Amino acid sequence: MQQRKTAREWVMSYLKILIGSALYAAGFQFFLYPNAIVTGGVTGIAMIINFFSGFPVGVMTLIINVPLFIFSWKKFGLSFILASLAGTVLSSVLVDLFALVPLEVTHEPLLGAIYGGIIKGFGLGLVYHTGATTGGIDIVAKFLRRKYQHINFSTFILGLDAAVIVAFAVLFKRFDSAMYAIICMYIASKVIDLVLYGAVNSKVCYIITDRSTEIKDAIVNDLHRGVTFLQGEGAWSGEAKHIILCVIKQNQIVELKHLVRAIDERAFVIVSDSREVFGNGFSYIGDEG
Image (tube, rainbow, N blue to C red; front, side):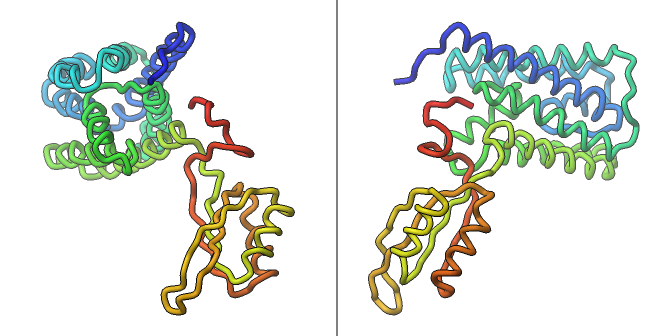
C-alpha cells in the first residue's frame, strides 16, 4: 500500500516544482531562445509557432497542454495532475515573465546549448523527482515509461524531442540551430539522469573462477564486501562452478582486479554499472530521492 505524503513532504515537493520550473524557464529564456535553439517537446512546438506569429511561448505552451492534461486525468490520477499542472503553469508563466527581463547572457550558440542544457536539465530533474512533469511531451513519456520500464524516462524525452527539432530544422532551414539543440538535449538528458538516479558510484561484479572460495575470502576480508555464490555450469566442460556476485564501490574496482589476478589469472570477470544499490554498506532502502 502506498503511504500518503505528510504536509512537510507536500511542501517540499511543490518547492522542488517551483525551483525546477524557474530553472527550466531561465535556461530556456536566457540561453536557448536568444540563440534560436529549439528545446523540443511542447515548448519547442510553441517556439516554432512564436517564430511564425510572435505569439508568447508560455501562453502557447499552456494552450497546447490542455488536451494532454485531459488525456492524462484518468491515466495518472489527481495527485499527478495537480503537481504537473503546477509545473506546467509555473514554467509557462515564468518563461513569459523572464522574457521581460533585459538580460543578455550570451549570444554564442555553443555556450547557450551547453549551459542552457545544464540549467534546463537540472530544473526538469527536480520536477521529475517529485513524480510530476512540466506537461506536454513529458506526459506522453511518463505513459510510455509505465509500459516500457526498462527504458529510462529521459530516453523517451530524448526521442520525442528529436521529432520537434527535426521539424524546426526543416521549417526554418536552421540546421545549425538544430545541431546545437541536439547538444543541449543530450546534456539535459544526462543532467536529468544525474538528478533522478544519482552518479554511478557502484559496480556489479560477476567472477567465474575455479578458485571461488579463495577469492570470496579475499573480497570479504580485504574489501569488506559481501559475496553471493551463484550456481553455474560450464557449457563446454559440463563442470559445476560457483559464480561470485558482489557489489563494490567504484573506487574499489582497481583493488578488486589486482586481488582476483593475484589469486587466479585465468578468472573471467564481468563488471557493470549499477544505478542504485540499497542495503548494508550502501544506501538505506528507506531513503527517498
